[in-house]
Image (cartoon, rainbow, N blue to C red; front, side, top):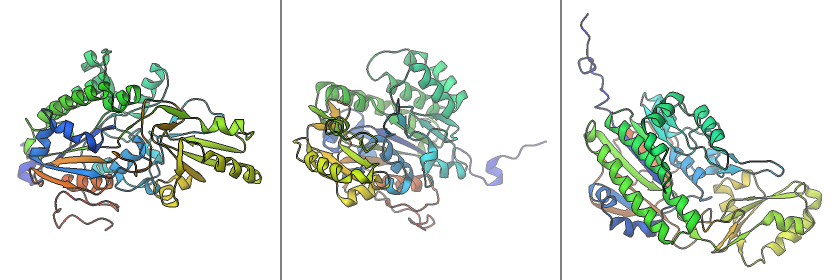
Length: 421
């Protein structure tokens, strides 16, 4: 029997389909773009495409709610991922919101798969059990190596993960700084060269880890930025050469900035010292902010008196506004929220931290895009990270679902429905 090719049938072949490479640069602020532009590789996408600067991040400015918005085009009050983790008094361990069951709206990978596009997700937050063909989810939190691997295999694609670990043993067994990003980069390059997926979602977090350990403005952070630029170049080389180079679009975005910290405040310890038990009230600590839950309304008078004194502490900047509580989704889970002053953090101490409100200095982010529909060498500014998802959907030719952002990079084809249609 003679096989009829897809070209004869009139169907688009895989090489005709649009391909998108979405790269997340964790904890890189807009104020660091000038440094990136002085390096060998990041300027390539700025020259080849459009660079958007002075972009607003999303509050709560932590990794998981932001990456959830990148996948959905809506803020946390709509998609449901309020913070990185769930904190409850008396519980042991960390409970991170890595599983897709936490989503309350459609996502970019789920809509791509509905459109018969193949998805590759590498350490991208909130992709656990996504069903992507190539899924290596990030399982964050403090736990043993064996427990982390068990969860990685359980909520990712077992065959793909095993194959990746076996093929990249050198990166797996490495112990140097940023070796996790080296593994992600190597897997990305192999799959791009072998034309294995239509949507790549890649998360690089060496800079974030380094800033937490050494500080946002430390020499180590500057070196991590240089390592990041090298990895960007390696991925761009693989994306822009070989199969489907002509139909490949790239989006590089940063999720949040990072601030230097010298002092940690422990709100629950202060509650205890004031004679208020965790059965009465409890603080959820999100680094740059903390959120109060009141479990015993009959003790509200003494709890309110405590919060009045709490606001007078030098490391507490202010109470969060009703709008900040609403748009972040915090009002769904907590009664009140508070912001840390510059140099302070709530809960666990790190020399660099995020999770602050968006009115802080040097706290904006950026994204850059290149592709067949994108103007080369263009510089823009403004908007928010909610604009990344509609841009990604248009690049892939997906039918839009309701989003709050808009594609600020190019005018999509009229056949692509607008936001909310």
